[in-house]
Amino acid sequence: MSATRKNSKDGAALFVVYLVLAILSLVGVIFGATESAGTLSSNLFLASLIVLGIDLAFLGYAWQLRFTTGNASSSEAGKLDAILEAVQMSENAKRVLFRDRELSVLRNTVQEDIERGEFHSALIVCDQMATVFGAVEESEVLRTKVQTIIHNFHDARICEEVEKLENMLADRKWVEAYQDAARLRRLFPESPQLHGLEQRISDVRIHYRHDLEARFLEAASCENVEQAMKLLRELDGYLTPDEARKFRVAATDVITKYKDTLGARFKMAVSDRRWEEAIEFGEVITQQFPNTKMAEEVKTMLETIRVRAGEDETSS
Image (cartoon, rainbow, N blue to C red; front, side):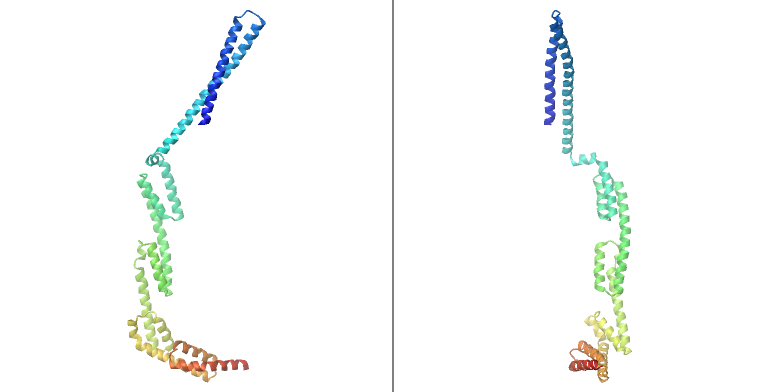
């Protein structure tokens, strides 16, 4: 603004200077024309006439400069007024003024959110299109598109996650399966595919427990002591104290037979000087039946057996 004012003042000053010179030149022309013929009068008339022509040309330039500067000042003032008016416009007025442009930006934003997989963000933008700009119909079309993509994406993801959970059940990872089910319910709370997921885990676990019970009782009745003992150890992690009572007699019989079998194998290995086998059976007895009399007797023998095993190895 200060430069515009300076240019305007310079144009006005030049106009005044050239106007004064034009008047003086005009006086010189008149004076030279009215004086009697002579060299001086002729020269004065000719010089004044030349100066007047030049001065009139510069006078026109000064006038144009003043006029142009004034127009530029007015144009800049108009632009400033427009900027001030735009700043002072309300948000609603701006929204109406730039509605088409804003809607185009929102459409692009929805598409970008879909491509990035940010579906919830895309739905929020759809809401803005309807509530802020009144594009209800277009908003519903975009919303339906986003929801369809979400549905397809969720179905594929849920099928993949449920398959992983079934693998956990097959591996009998019950704790991990319950934790994963809770995570899926948080991620997809409205998915019908996840209804009854915890009950599914519970049913599979109970079915496996019943299978263990049946196999244990069968092994015990067939006096397959080692298999029965293995099943009993696994079954112990599934039974409550009340549930375990019905297996007490069978479990006691299996444990007693298993312990006696280990003792017999230990004695036979010692008798046959199979020291490595004797050490193996002895360690199993002391670990699994640490508070029994058999375990105390085996402990006292193991040190001697280890010495004998070292001697036999050295001699061989």
